[in-house]
Image 1: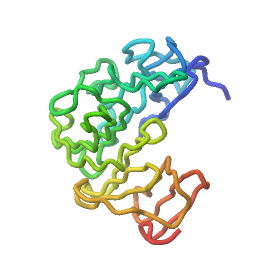
Image 2 (image 1 turned 180 degrees about the horizontal axis):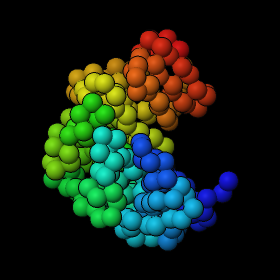
Image 3 (image 1 turned 120 degrees about the vertical axis):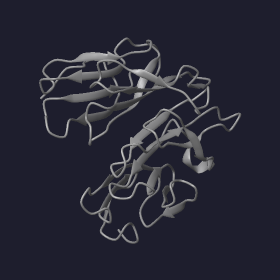
Length: 246
């Protein structure tokens, strides 16, 4: 059933309240090739029948990610991405910003302490094992190599870069995906051309192999983190042993 947002063009995330399925947040990335008004973060309180835009920057800055703290659904984080694809270049990020809401999306505060000025495309995830720990994967300015994986241990108030491994942010337009283990706050996944996992909070990385390349999505069983479903350009694959085999 079509539920509106007709001119959204590209939607990056859909987040549903864990106990009230009528409360839905959608991050609208918008058009790739020019300005579009229907961008930003939208909220529905009636299961998608009606939508209210709760976060907007401008007609060239869409929402590349929105996530909810499932232990406190009034807390949300959103990554806003200024982007445009022109015939001769890719614009990514002069006006990109990271935001947090503590009142269910009614108001938002920009997060900046410890983050690079030029952020580019971003993804963000709250650790289900520790809601104070938040990971942000940030493209940064590729010419100055200021991107990488950033971590906050105080709910986004301040940040530090934990890894500048270029594999995490290469070809950011196509990737930039980060996922947190539901049981272990120090286990984090980043999907790019390779699939990468860290078990020490992002300081070192191992490759997850055995399927096709170019990884775009990951589901982690919230009750059994050894059970994974990974999606890439070759389809989907399931593991029951933490990615050792698929």
